[in-house]
Amino acid sequence: MPYQTNGRRNYKKEYQLYHSRDEQKKNRAKRNGARSMMAKAGKVSKGDGKDVAHKTALSKGGLNQMYNLMVQSKSENRSFKKDKNSKTVSEKSKRERRKRR
Image 1 (cartoon, rainbow, N blue to C red):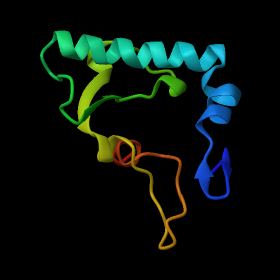
Image 2: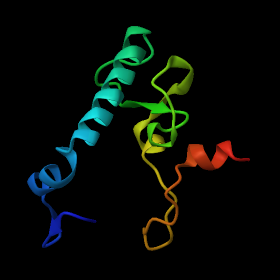
Image 3: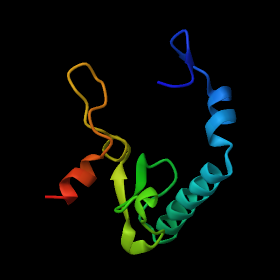
């Protein structure tokens, strides 16, 4: 994993090099806006352990519209296919792999 030293994650360096970039700030604002929309619609609430997922990811041209949003468990939304050594095999989420079938 990037931004690790001695097996520990360096959050300060990670923020400086990645999360503080303008593009990432805009993406975070879009994700926050999507969650806000779903909260106003009564589909999620603070502390419910759910994620608001984009059916078509923002990075792949998806929009922040209700038809492109869905509620998923955190583990399902953040999962990627891994091998027996827990190394990431696919950068596609389970949702994206199912969508292509």
